[in-house]
Image (cartoon, rainbow, N blue to C red; front, top):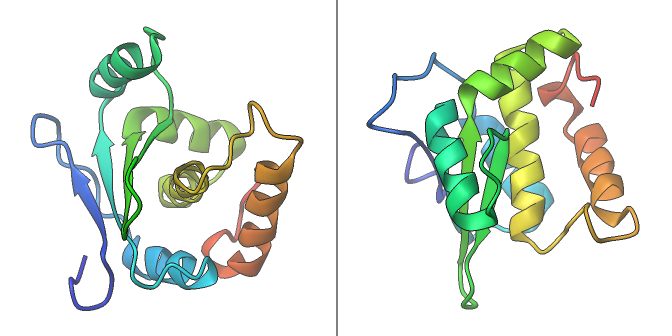
Amino acid sequence: MDPDSSSWEVVWDPDGEEPPPLALDDFCAALQQKLGLKDSELCVLLCDDQRIQALNAQFRHKNKVTDVLSFPQKEAGPYLGDIAISLPQAQRQAQEIGQSLEEEVRFLILHGVLHLLGYDHETDQGQMLQKQSELKMELGTFFPGSLH
């Protein structure tokens, strides 16, 4: 990402395979603006199934592959936290619902950011899923074929 345009960074796991080119900068900037998080910072790690399974086992005590994990920053400040996304899992999900990998990764970033902001679809009364749907509608050009 261009450090002058956003303080949200997308990186790939240096121990894994380099991911295919994904156009995520404009989406991250638009999401950041929609959420009023202009001065916020976060990092998105694109990784493989093995890495996300290890993170899931270590931090959630679930020894299985998942699509996205969020690690909120405990202290108040501009740094929101970290998000990890399994590209192979995202690819499987994208193929399953007939959309591009890029669109699925955008969705997973949106989902992960909402978790960083304190939303939790496992415990709330539908607030996270509603906010997620609203943001997808508002950011519709980034989700042209989405079925989520």
